[in-house]
Length: 343
Ligand code: BGC
Image 1 (spheres, rainbow, N blue to C red):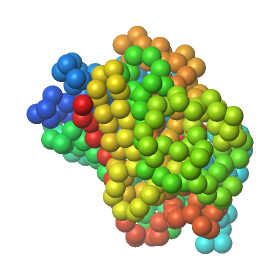
Image 2: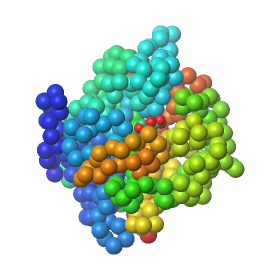
Image 3: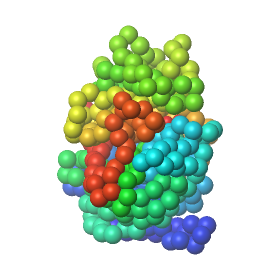
Image 4: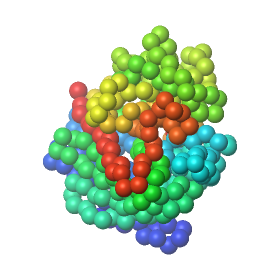
C-alpha cells in the first residue's frame, strides 16, 4: 500500500510503502532516503510493537542527523582523512566527521529522493542514480535497494549496483532497534549475541588501526548472549573511545550466515541478523540526545542499537581488509536480513 509521507523542503513528494505478511507483521519504507520507517512485530501477547526508531513524516527524516533507518552510502562508516587513492588517482570526499568521511559524506544517500521502480504488498525496489563524481566518488552507477517482507518474518534488504567505472561501494541500513518498542525507553536490558571472535581496533576518531583484536576476555565478547548494558561502562579503551559500543565486529565464517541476534525479555520479541558481508558495526546509540521521534516519543542515549552490515571501516586504506573496491561492470550484490520471532 502506498500512502503520502509528506513533502520535502525542495517540494518533492515522498511516499510511504507498507508491506504486510500473513503473520500480522508490517514494515514501512519510504522513497525518501530508501528509509525503513516502521517494523511492526507481534509480541508474546500478540500486540503489535514498532521496533525501530524513526519519525512521523519526511520532514523528520530531512532534519534528522542520526541516520534513523536510512540507506547510507556510497561507503558506509568512515574513510580516514576524507580521501582515497584508486588506480593512481586521489579522490577527495566531503569531511563530515572531523577530518573523516562518514556514511558517504555530507550529501549521503539517506537524504535523497529515490525512485520506486516496482512495488507490491511484499516488496519495493528503490533506485538511485549516482553520477560520476557524486560525493567525490568516481564511477556512475544505478543503485538499487529492494526491501521484502517475507512469510518467514524477514525484512530482507537486497543491494545491487553495477558501476560504470572502478569505484567503491559499501551500502548499509542504519536502523535503530528496540525490541520492547521504539518508545519503551533504553535498550540496555536487551540481550545481544554477535557471531564474531574478533573486532577491528580503532583510534579515538573511530578509524581502524588495522589491528584485529580477539574478543575473548574483553567486554566486546558477545559470542554468548548478554545484555547490551552488562559491560558497556567497563574501563576498556575501545568503549571509552566509542562512548559505548560503536565498533566493527569481524564476523565469523563467510557467505550468507547469521551475524547477530537480539532479544527483549519484556515483549518476547527476538531478532536474528543475517548477512553475506564480512563485518558489522554494532552501535549502541551513544550519540542520541533527546531526539523527538514517532508518535510523540522522545528518544534518549542508548534507546536502541544498530546492526550495520558492511565491509570494514576504512578498508580502502587497509591492505588486509577486504573490499570495498568494485571494478567497472562488476556486480555489487549483497543481502542483509532482520528476521523476527518471539519466545
Ligand atoms: C557510526 C557512529 C555514528 C553513527 C551515526 C555509526 O555507524 O559508527 O560513530 O555516530 O553511525 O548515528
